[in-house]
Image (cartoon, rainbow, N blue to C red; front, side):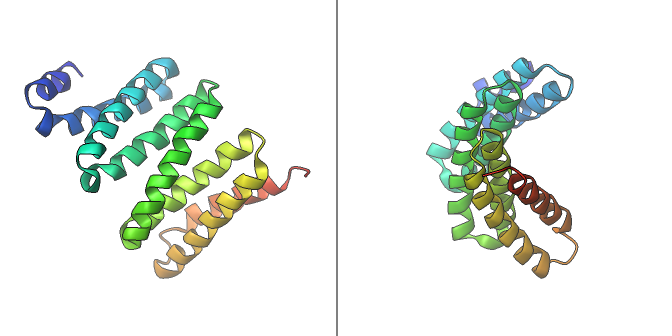
Length: 172
């Protein structure tokens, strides 16, 4: 990480995206070995960098900001900060929705994924009706994607259908 930081300090325009990517990857790796607090620090720094990059050049950097926000939501949830994680995934969905409206062929799968993640987060904080709305939208998108690309989105569709069943299993 030290090398990425040095490169980013010397030439931020060329190397800040690489630093953010490395921090994102580090957060995932740290989470996998149970070092969640350190992983959270890394992804928070990545989000800060991605946010600045997206403000300067949204066409290039908004997708990466949305990805980092999705990862932040997972890390926040894993350390028990579900409300903050929910804020992060909702922001990611907002970004993904705008991107998918502008270019559905490229961004619709990512919107469906973010909606599916949002539905789980909403369910986990007891907002099951809202979670169900989000996952039903994800299912619609995955069905359309699976129809257009046989076999490619079947697992994602199945996961969203299982999330829908999970959310429906709770009493009103």
